[in-house]
Length: 507
Image (cartoon, rainbow, N blue to C red; front, side):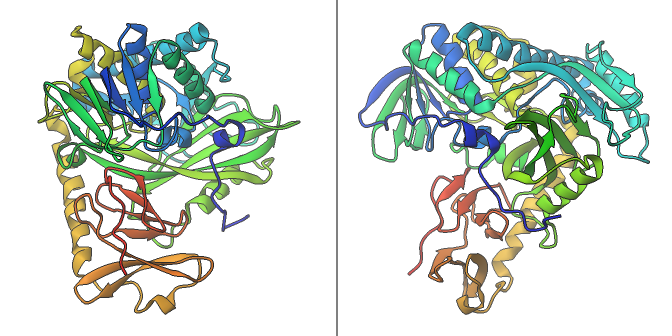
């Protein structure tokens, strides 16, 4: 077993290249400006364009260049946060609306695929939820009852997951789930938006946004988009300094893809129940092989234990259950935003003008939450009633989630103690090529990286979002903020928000 797996691009980017769109190079006007060209942004843009609205989409990278490219594309109403927990937090009506909205999201994706003729390997299949050997199966009984109360009456208990290589014991079978190739789907969505008059500009960073009458988005190049409404669909809101970030936490989740003989694993979606949990699906491979995609081993961004080797742990878990698995062909990670009450935040941005909307808090179900966002935001912008609006309201206060809210924010507060601690190294000379570490220099903390040619790069270790000290992520060669999940590459450029600016370069 390889304990030093090197990260690669996600499997989707190996097979699909989406051409970048022209950078915004002039001031424009539109009905709705959508910031972010992932699943949530493009679905919102598509549904608005279908209603005849003039839509402009901006993205700092490219179409799907953020977290959508890192998904494993489980398209499900079997939610990562169980229905028993959703019922406890949001009541029976809330759990029912969650089941209804995610079910309709799957249906909407399928209808878009059919209507637009998108070749993205969309397929319906079963999903299975199981407990690890020796764990209490009463959890499955509780979840079965809660799923039925939420309206998912076709969920039922089966004797085991349909694996010949490993006996999981009892499992819940969720029919009617789906999977697809996410980047091909986004490519089709982008074409459909543009066919209806929408404009997509990549390599265009939205640096400043102001709602209200004459709402405007200003880009890095100084160009502006004047609009009637702004939708911020950037995984984590880059227009919001504090409010939303107190209600959710950023986690890294890890994925590997291994060759397996075609037909050796039944095509379905699979999830287990521990913390951290694991998730499994198949994708088409080359020749006589499929690719077994296995994810999990989540931890808070910037708070990884140095002894934690997530890719090695994933490989060990996989080989115990799938001894026929071959080489690890793909290895990547993604950013998951976990709300304190387990459901996404979709709607008007709290404390902002009424025409500024946000989408965040995917909670591990970004494909359906992103599609729900498109449906819900199209209704809100048009002034239509939507039964889901209160459930997903970003301004909501879920009293039963108060203990978790307090715990998460105490965790964030504790990270600021790093401002006063010693550095990890005493001198840049202590660094091997290709590694980074934090150095204290007087009152300052410095993020030091020695590249493969032994050149040293020094950056301020202070995250420009809210002043936390970043940490070196050796697995991904990045600087990660342990407070709100901002990430920067080894030389300080932004990878993930909420930070907009990169780490300050030091002489």
